[in-house]
Length: 79
Image (tube, rainbow, N blue to C red; front, side, top):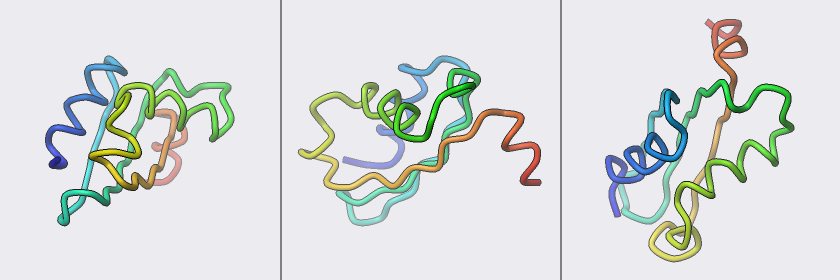
């Protein structure tokens, strides 16, 4: 598994999302995901949306995925 494939899967599952995935060992990854779909959702619900884009890869080919999930407004406030 590589970061580019994970990024493509998240982007396909969350159209319009800005996604940046990092990970060098092939099983542990970190992702920043910015999406309008996160508006009004608690962090756990946001993470579930991202995990759903990866399906059975979570816990299998992807051992760990650290997530930072923000709305575009939240991301703009951090700059």
